[in-house]
Length: 153
Image (cartoon, rainbow, N blue to C red):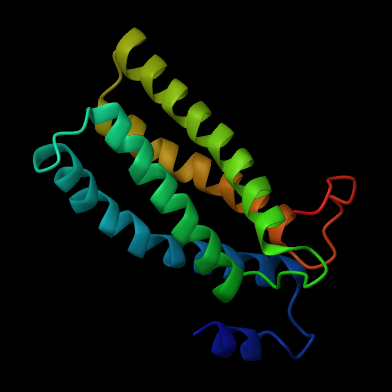
């Protein structure tokens, strides 16, 4: 799929905005498998292994972030071979972790403090934070990224 979309945009006639839009749509599409698996995974950890719900959710989030990292690296972004995979992964994990914390904080504020309908807030956060996660992922994973002062892993 990536290659078909890349071929469609490889003529040079398409703008950077169009190419970025295609990458963003791929970003959303590639995130679906981890999201779909995360729900039953969380259920199994809580109901069958009797893990504390917040601890189970941390495991699920780490699973999602890890799966998404490799899916994005393989199918969406041209990762630089000059930057080791582990280095990119930990940069990705740290940044996405902060975004997830901000997402949770906004959700809690609007639902618990201001009384907004929780599903509306959740859907809004998906849209808002997907854009932020995409831009951050693009920065970390794109070829020629500028994060060069971090020691290699």
